[in-house]
Image (cartoon, rainbow, N blue to C red; front, side, top):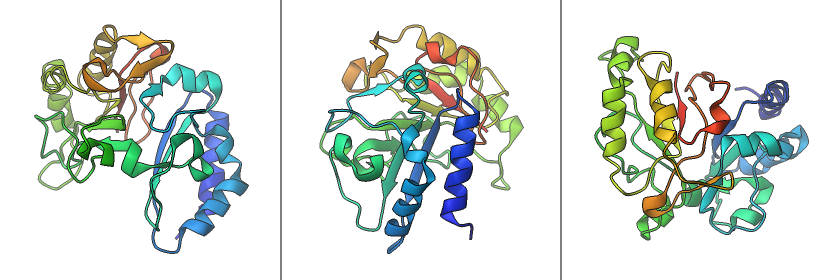
Length: 243
């Protein structure tokens, strides 16, 4: 087991070396582990780069990628477990947003590739209350029979037609902030994201993520293995992540 202090120090080195990278970190804390983890976070200096809303209790408008880059708050940090509870976004301890309020996603096993709704096991508490303000990840990948990532399968799923069909399933409702794919360079992910974002309604460097006007944060394509954003990604809306 790696020492959290070493891991966090390495992340800090990465984020300070790569000035245009944005990281999304979700921490699931085992019972009795949060105190040591939070201590390591504070000592690492990483919290200087974590996004922290100034006055929002629940984040209705998430910053665009370019805004995060400009402000050098290029880490979105979510946490859960070990007794962590709901907290005002502006006052969450160590800038760690409670995942139960702020992080939603579709299934990660490819079982809901025709759906735009957050999986029940990954929905935020707000979803259950009829609100949809959390940071929303649409997982758009499926493993092969060996349960391994497949470039051939990714090439099909990442076609413009398939991506457009998946996004159309959202209708006039909530759109994802992040499109997670495998093998971002297979198919037409970059072209789709660029065109999809050209119609988003951005307001002052932010996208409204509630209701029919919900848009995505602007950026390019992210890879589950840390694939690159296009150089001009900060000018766009939907963010995609591939591996």
